Amino acid sequence: MNTIKYLLIIILSFGTGCASNVTSEFMCRPEKPCYERGMQIWQKAIDEISAANFPEHKFQGRIWTYPFKNAWATPRGTVNITEVLLNDLNETKRLSLDPKVTAIAAHEIAHIKLGHYNSNDWVKIQKLLANLHDRGFPNPNQVDAIKIKELTKLNEKLNLAADKLAITYLLKAGYNPDDYLNLLNWVQDNMANTEQIGTYIIPSSIKNRIKGILAFKNEKTTYLPN
Image (tube, rainbow, N blue to C red; front, side, top):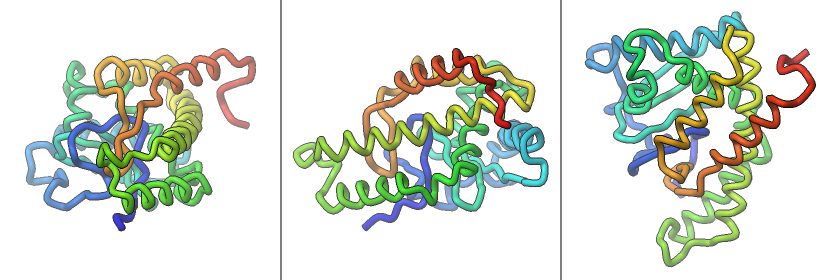
C-alpha cells in the first residue's frame, strides 16, 4: 500500500508527480539555477505570514522541480511548492512578490495550524486512498464513484477551512481578502478542472471554494480571530 505522507492542497496538480512520491533528486538545492530567485521569493512569502501571525515559529520553504503545478505542507512544518507553479504565479513580478504566492503560503500554513494531519477527516482520506489503491484505482474500469465523491467532499472541507484561516493570516500581514480570491480565480482560469491527492485525480472544488470565500467575505463578523 502506498502510504500518503503529505497533505496536498488546495492547488491543482498536473502530470504524474505527487507529494507522496517526493524524491531528493527533484529538490531545488542551492547549487541549482532554480534556487536563488525561487527561494528568495518563496521563503519571503512564508516569512511574511509567519512574522505577522506567529513570530516565534519559523517555517522552512522548499521548492521542487517536478513538471507539475502544486503546493503542499508536511507534518513537520515544511512548506513546499513546485518551481513551475511558483514561476507561473510570479512571472510578471520577477523578483518582487506576487500576493498570490503569499496566499498559497498562508493556505499551506493554515493546514498545519488547523491540525489537519491529525484530524478524523484526514484519517478518512487516507483510508479511502488505501482502499482505492487496493482496488486498482485509477484504472477507469474500476473507479468507485461513491468513494471518489466522499474523497472530493472531504478534500473540499479541509481546503475551505484552510482558505478561511489563510485569509485571516493575510489580513494580519497587510494583505486584502481579494488577494486570496485572486489566487483561487487564477487557479480556476489557468489550471485543470481536477485536483490530485496522492496519485488520485478527483473533481476540482475550486468553484465551491470561491463561493465559500465570497460568503465568508460578506459575513458581518470580523475576519480576524479573537
